[in-house]
Amino acid sequence: MAPIGTLIGPTVNSRNYKARIVAHVLGVDLETTPSFQMGVDNKTPEFLAKYPAGKVPVFEGADGFQLTDSSAIANYVASKSPNSAQLLGETDEERALILQYTFFAESELAPTVAGVLQPLLGVTPFIKPAFQAVEEQHFRFLGVLNTILLDKTFLVGERLTIADIIVTCNLTMSFKLFLTADDRKKYRNVTRYFKTMVNQPAFKAVMGNVELCEKRVQPPAPAKKEKKEKKPAEQPKKAEKKEKPAKVEEEEEAPKPKPKSKLESLPETSMKLDDWKRFYSNNDTKPDAMEWLWKNYDAEGYSFWKVEYKYNDELTKLFMTNNLIGGFFSRLERARKYAFGNLLTLGKDDDNMIWGYFIVRGKEIPEEVTDAADFESFEWTAADHTDPKTRAEIEDCFAWEGPALPRECYDGKTFK
Ligand SMILES: N[C@@H](CCC(=O)N[C@@H](CS)C(=O)NCC(=O)O)C(=O)O
Image 1: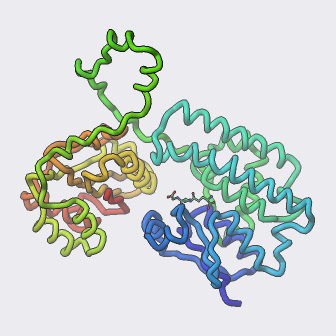
Image 2 (image 1 turned 180 degrees about the horizontal axis):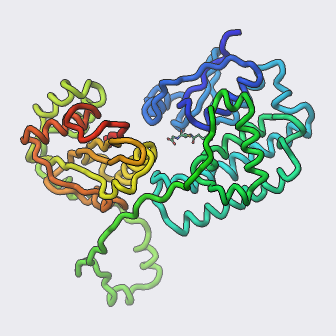
Image 3 (image 1 turned 45 degrees about the horizontal axis):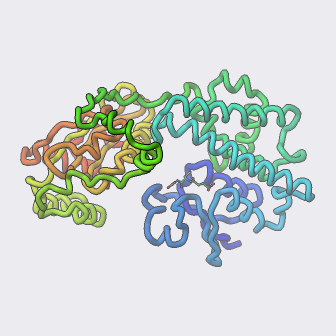
């Protein structure tokens, strides 16, 4: 039988597993994209034209049919088998219960799993009260599931259905990175169920062995930000304020248009950062892009900075370190117009570092950068690009490889 289509997205991903486990159970031929690059292949204009949310996985049928959302895709893949009822339910009641658990998995489990893990992995800022609230919700839903599973092996009826596949996949990252042995004891029915599921041959064939969390991931080191002294000019003018009627105060508190960046008033530069970003993205870094940069770099209009993480000794898993860079970059959003850089994850698990170089507009680190919540967690040192050693480091850093890197490069992120 020819493949029904392609499941597009990273293959090591619990949302991607759903359709593949279904395909494995029912013998449906489904293609995958093992070389998919997250954050690159799902952000191209062609991808976004078809799938505007830019999220994965998505499905593209051999007949051109397009579908998003992992649980919908898994259902569609199942429907292509003559034995689909085995996973999709035999009776109206089974089908309704499957739908109930699918919604539970997507609207209760998935957001709370993401809600606890994203701040711990540095993808979003770690704000303790917000974290505690979502953690409480996550435990609440695990409690619900624990009660349901008290006397059940499978969620619906006495055999595996797509409900088990969806719920198990949505719990996977929590069991891997969040739920400690103590938590697992507390939610022992959920734990028994999860272990039973991931040991089913179809799950194993797709996911491999799932190692349960030994030590919960810890939040990234907080940004050690010194309290900025308010300049007198920034103090609210109390006397004036008091006299104003309440209505005016409300209006004053309405969002104001963003102030123009100070960088906009710098003298014109001969190098447009966007031109560099485009050239860098579309050409080999060494030698082509670097030759372009050294030829066009305007040392009056820009400055180079070496950027190093201050708390390398607290870094653990390489992928978490790389996520931390991603989180930092997302908080640098305001600086996108004025900065370009590469931060690399160097070393190995439990012994790694973040290191890289940035080009910024102007001679100082602009407030668009210093305002990022975790700016203070990084050391920014002015770099002299005319020094041969520094130049070699910048070249290898931007290429993510080469002898000038202080350690072996595992991965990295480009801020552009
Ligand atoms: N409801 C969607 C969620 C998809 C989703 O959030 N995918 C993540 C990866 S696991 C993604 O593509 N994130 C990229 C982005 O948000 O830009 C599904 O189940 O497929």
